[in-house]
Amino acid sequence: MPLKILATADLHLGKKSSAVPTDAEESSTRHTWKRMVEWAINHDVDVVVMAGDLIDQDNRYFEAIGPLQDGFDRLSKKGTAVYLVAGNHDFSVLAEIIRNKEYENIHLLGANGSWEKKTHRGERGTVQFAGWSFPNKYVREDPLATFDRLELDPNMPTIGILHSEADNPESKYGPVDRGNLRSAGPDAWILGHIHKPTPLDKEAPVETPFIAYPGTPHALNSGEPGVHGPLLLEIDGKEKIRVNRVPLSPVRYESVKATVQPSDDETTLRDSLTTVLREKAHELLTELEGVSFLVFDIELTGNNPDASKMDHWAEQAVEKYSQELETGTTVLIRKVVNHVEPAVEDMEALARNTSPTGKLAKTILAIEQGQTTPFLERLMEKWEMQRQRINRSGTYTPLDDKNRLAEPGEEQAREYILQECHRMLNHLINQQQQEQ
Image (cartoon, rainbow, N blue to C red):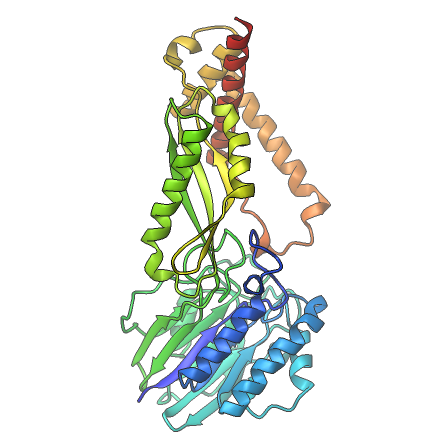
């Protein structure tokens, strides 16, 4: 029988999922940690691998120490080994928690930023682990620069464990190059830091070296859509690795589009949203076992003379919508983005008008046709000035890179301006109609 390894990272004990009831046990990452431990015990897993950021921050110490040690205790009684490294969030506190109890089965590798190897010998095989832990919150040097100091047994299956940001040489979180990972020697790399899981081919043997971010086992926000859970690696000698994902997150985020018709009012919009959510949820039904909350972001598109009222109607849906599926999953709405355009019969004719509505229509056409106008150029300049002012603000300084929003480029700026022009045009048209 192959050796079974359950691999994860970025558990962030102490955090909760956004847009779900905060008093629900399933909202907390400790809930998924308990599920992982139970799954490992019930499925006779030999080794649990954890690639850093088990704890969210040092100030989560007291929230994390109990659940983490309870899990370690249960795994210890079962005889399941744990090999782990520290990330940028838990570089100091993780070692402290482990030191509070003397665990024979818990192995923190690579303390102080020095590579370390350990060999696991079990009834179903032998494998060596190579790990490196963050010595500080920020590391701008490539951890692989000193990897060659390890003397690995080339005949033994090897798993590398590393919390790092791949393919971003400017990163301050241990930047590495995937090409260097492939040539370093291990047959598989389990990486931490990126919360979005690496996609997998279902039930397919993997090419070695296998390199993956397991992602957060517990989905925390809408930026982490889809299935979340640890990876199960089954190893039967070098180059014989099978990998599958074990879906354990009780929260799942998805997005869906709903098309608004010109004749829609608040009632028909509500019916349309309900239908779209029900259809999408039923598409996912076979994947929702064990999922307590399915949270949607909805994008509204289409044309409607009451486009400006969509925001108010959508607020009602966000606040009040809650539907339980036959799986026991509760469907919620996190956000509705209104991209509905005003129902203008002839935008080109309106654009020839010198009024404010004409100027807005001309700007809309320019953006949609990939062109520009002096007015649009001025808007773009103001957009860039505001972007730079916000980025220089100290408000966002405490955020690390992976929690920051990507800086918007010209395409995103034009999309935002387009949305606001539609909104303003709709408002002006409705105002004119009311005055007539």
